[in-house]
Image 1: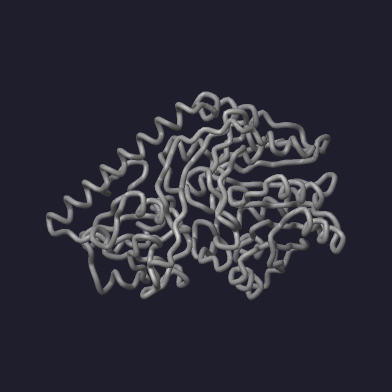
Image 2: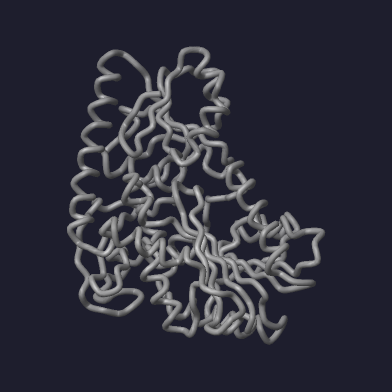
Length: 409
């Protein structure tokens, strides 16, 4: 583990800490019952603002070998994501891939996006560093390289298969400590008239909707558009369009080309920059206020759960995304307040939430055991969850959504 002394993008030393969420284990580690709790390592979870370029970033870097060696997040278990990526792939195939063009996705997970190119005149290839997840992608018929994407692997791929018409990076920029080498690799691999399409959780949404539980060690950076534009500009590239998309609680999809490429700069770019400026996303006082509001949410949710327990009510959780590790650990919520969590991902079932050790089981548990309330920890797909659990609601069960403020539905 290492602590930053300068900004990950502009390398300015003028970085200021504004939030500490304590020390937590890696959010996706999910130990098995009976593990040696003393071996569970926690790391500081602290946020800093670069006062020069506006990048919000973690102060500590946990080695990627620890975070991604045996990754337990599989995108294909989330129906909302499957639909999102199917639509995204259709746009790429229609507008940017070209006939038999090479489309490369960085951090391709289990191939949830790339499998949509099967049967089309597209050469789709994924880079996925987690061996178990890359194996699942290959078994689904998606050509996948089990490695990290960087300037070295990009140069090797270019030599073997030529340049890429499209490079995709969905929610991966936040995970990378060596941003300069990543973008250098993208510039090497991208065709002269090629397009890079990148999605990331928008800092404006995180701030406006109090999505603090999206802060965990895998997410080293929390992006607004301004620092991203600065990063690509350092390597001779430019953002020519940007779209707001609802996925993950509010994200941006940006379109990047080499300077002088064939796409005119959309007015959307300046519009987003103006919104960020109005929100105060480049000012330290904005985030100090944000930190205070998180403490208020913690106090409200703890008071709600303790009151329900005092009334003899039982609470379980629904969804064990990485964000639940941050929320439960920072709030100090363990099995005494939330008895167990159900999750549809088989890879997480029969495991424990890191740190607080709330047990995780399959959704079928709710058929044999009826808690009074379900705390929706995967709040970004709360509509999908409540629809799936219509029987729970019909039998008198109620839902608790913790973000942006604790609310019983």
